[in-house]
Image (cartoon, rainbow, N blue to C red; front, top):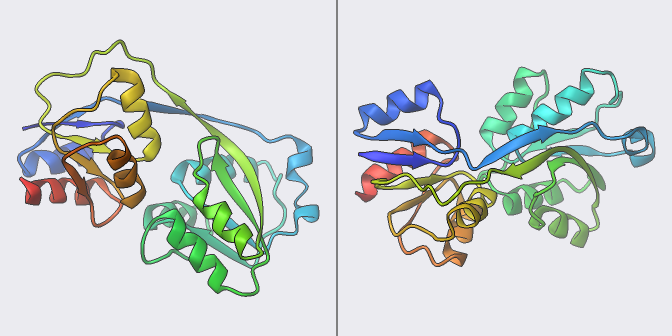
Length: 229
């Protein structure tokens, strides 16, 4: 059964899909360009952050490109990550991060607010970051400094949606938006969301068959699809 992945599937993901009776067809809708903030943005002494915040693996990658140049000399009291995969990428770089039970921005913001000694954070993010995190933190008296370390670019297609797809995997609200922009329509086949914010984005576009994965992983998305079918 052919299933479209809106990002490049790994060899491991393709093998797992095959075992479950699926054939993953990669059709990446987004690409990423890493940025180098100017010196003024990197004056962390003035920011004096109590915590660093990461809401994607791309944010970690962009951060590491700066950190490895010695441009971020200070380590904060606490580091937070939106999910286990983002935390794992930080761990590989030598940083331990706390993760909320539910892997989305609202839960992350509430977790940070629960730490009453956190009064300011630096959010390493991309240009299409969502607003929920900052809104909740600011509302609770936490200063948010956003440092853009990568840029999300939507791939352009000429309405060449692959035929015979029986389901679609969506990994972010940005991918949902890019799908509609690229193909000028939303498919009536089952749409699998990696999390609640992506599911909400699909709902806003009136997708009728929305499946939400229990965990933020391709394996969980495929399992949810199989159970649905």
